[in-house]
Length: 119
Image (cartoon, rainbow, N blue to C red; front, side, top):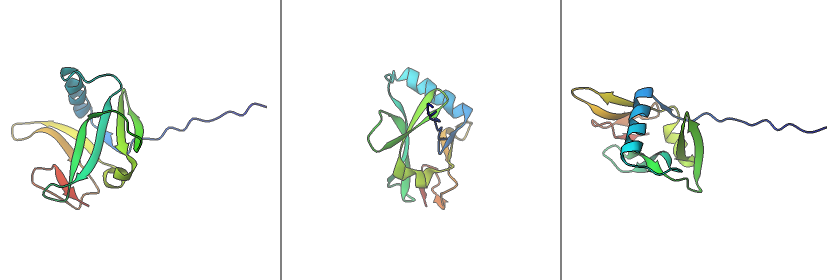
């Protein structure tokens, strides 16, 4: 009897709102990001609160996990998941704020600009 292998789908550890996705796709188009590139989300040391966010387009590296977010591919280093699990990336387009916003439930403190945090 043939064994049926079940494909497991792993949900992305972060959520990207519809408005943020629209902006990411716009940026990809305007910057002529080549096929094969995906969205890289991560953290790096630095910033006024200890860590700052990484958001950009890149190819997959050996240390990356890959997730599908609709028709966009997400790349994230496995070790960064600890700091980003459950995070939401949103886009604000208001009079006082315009840009990507990181709503991170793992952040103990964030800086005034919202681009760095401590965990």
